[in-house]
Length: 206
Image (cartoon, rainbow, N blue to C red; front, top):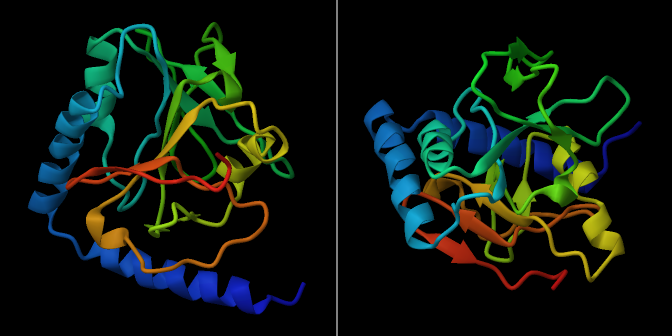
């Protein structure tokens, strides 16, 4: 398949944003990870009983493990994504428990796969914190290109009345771009959480 101009632009932006993110100092990364927790608490994003989707950080992604630990301490129900087998895109989200049941997926990212763990689709989550490479002022997100999150949230394009989950991108503030190209299947963010702010977007699907 011949790459389209938009795909070539997206790939160039991915390279640029990866380098921008990798250049951040370790001390800044640690401080940013802690700052996320304070902002999440201030804006009441974590609550007892709430179903919260998070992720295990890979490479230079924002580390949300302190956020995960705080959510668990507040007795929220925390779910992590499971990458589907090749040829499929929709993800299940597995509820974390006390027993260790970690498995490295084909990208080398840890997944929680206890055989008795509850699994749900994205529409059963209340909040979903998503990793990203870049975001813009309209709430569009640039991911790694796998399409797993967009496929898992595609029902939001078909139904105006289904609001769950609240889709929140997690990023360093340096990952903001003035504008990002977007495709018809891209799912915009409801909000973004950086080390500096929690910003709500006027979503095109609202």
